[in-house]
Amino acid sequence: MTLGLDLGYRDRFYIPRAADGGESVYLCGHSLGLQPKTVRAYIAQELRDWELLGVDGHFRARHPWVEYNKLLTEQTARLVGAQPLEVVTMNSLTVNLHLMMVSFYRPTARRHRIVVEENAFPSDQYAVKSQIGFHGFDPAESLVTVAGEEELEDLLDREGESVALVLTGGINYSSGRAFDLARMAWAGHAKGCVVGFDLAHAAGNLVLQLHEWDADFAVWCTYKYLNGGPGSVGGCFVHERHARDFGLQRFAGWWGHELETRFRMGPDFHAMAGAEGWQVSNPPVVALAVLRASMDMFDEAGMERLRAKSVELTGYLESLLDRHAGRGFSIATPRDPQRRGAQLSIRVSGSVRAVWERLAAAGVVCDWREPDILRVAPAPFYNTFEDIDRFVDCFVGFL
Image (cartoon, rainbow, N blue to C red; front, side, top):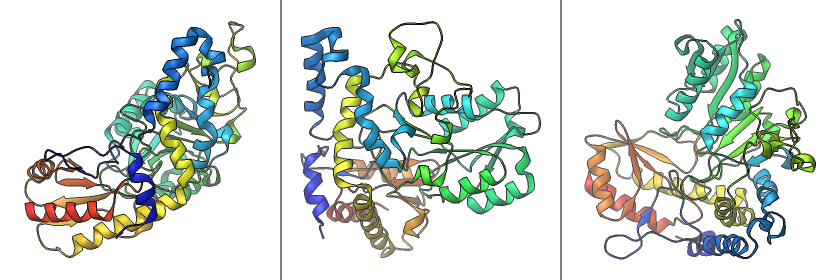
């Protein structure tokens, strides 16, 4: 089985090699996406401009560095369902999460709690606990977890007046469960809470409509499904209703200063309107060049087409695994395609690490999480139905 999207895009990525010299079965885009073949050319352009122009590259480069991040603005807005004013590419995910909480977590004695998803990614938990402690509250009292939408609504009905911030992932990193973000945003706002999202596993994976869903803010990384490279620059969304609220507390830096007067080097900070006003430092141009190589393809393909392909691939993986039900594993991810992204989390009886090691030796790249989860994610840009056939054959044979 093949579809045009495989033929059109797989050859535009480098597929890592297995020990036998053939292509590996790479099902780890949920952790690190593959390198687009155009990356070298995108980087070379900036290195050439640096070589020939030096500091003048800020204004005379083919893509002047002083506004290089704007090359990604409209593409990013389309990717996450936002207006251009509402998005910026900057920093890294957890740094952006901290910057957002500086502005949007303003606890009081009455309203100080943060609600996060159950089993949230550890970095989110560390960030949230540290912010709570920074404000003088006890995470044991101020941090609350919920399993999903229903539990959030029940909690808010009972205790919503004590909640300052609802902060949930788009997809849980371990289970692969996708949340109804529109429903969660509505529930939080109905009780006067600020609502933010961590879209690390959702950006480039699900069709998002952040402006329409009315989130106050969102953050994401770009090295997973967005193929931006290891440790690549993160993304940030701030809803337009906050675009000109210059009274919002923020940690300021000169790249968030309005461009018209930035280089006058004045002592007083005047924030740019929109998400760009939360920038702190000038962006790493070479890193953004890598991300551009991938984002150009996202813009060309469109998230609707990619998502449709993803649903087919993940559904095919699920159907093959179901043929071997009762063989010492189960699927921990929801069965409804609308409640998951590309990732299936497979709960393995016995040693999941031993299974993973045997898969790796056979040229199958996925990952595992304690205590018993094997995470497998067919990415629609470069994975094929044949990849899934090979994975299932190996996986079942190694149980």
